[in-house]
Length: 210
Ligand SMILES: [Zn+2]
Image 1: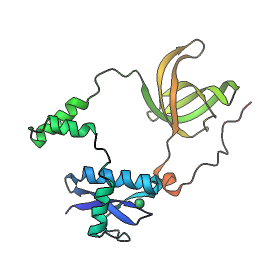
Image 2 (image 1 turned 90 degrees about the vertical axis):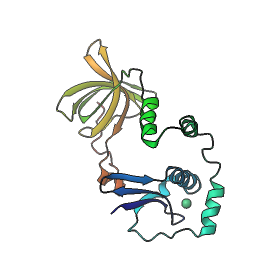
Image 3 (image 1 turned 45 degrees about the vertical axis):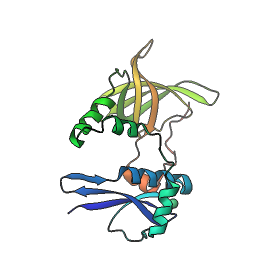
Image 4 (image 1 turned 135 degrees about the horizontal axis):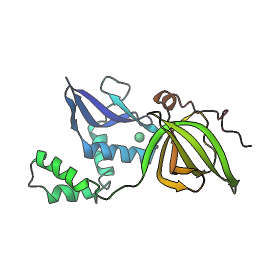
């Protein structure tokens, strides 16, 4: 039996859009309606109001037909110029199965990417330079496979020792440190638990400046 999921807005206490999950995977997904519901309520009620619920949750009320028709009117301007419409129009003679393949073919990124991504724990930090609200540092990171990487970065504040980060950067040859990842972006990997509880780290074990 499929389970249906809806997008909801905490503020309006309504639900909209729908996707069904079948025993064999994803079922129907009302793309247009879901997107419009999200875009509309994010704009009018704020993204923090958006949730996903399953059909079992019943502290949301369905929209009356008049309210739903108003929603359609209010959101008709949302993505009228989408490239997706063009795609569908261009390939409208294809069957759905063929269109799925066409979508993959047209959207595949062909040019090479010299960036790399690691996820690991920050073991040690050395400050290289500080000033003007920025800090340059080198650090050692042990990734999920146990490999140790040297990274260099320039950020507004030091990352926190013993915390896990997702790091994107490129491999560079550093004059002193040898092979390093020059960091483009470094963000904490927040566990689902923390995210839900909004339990942000107090920063107590932030790397100490020496
Ligand atoms: Zn809303």
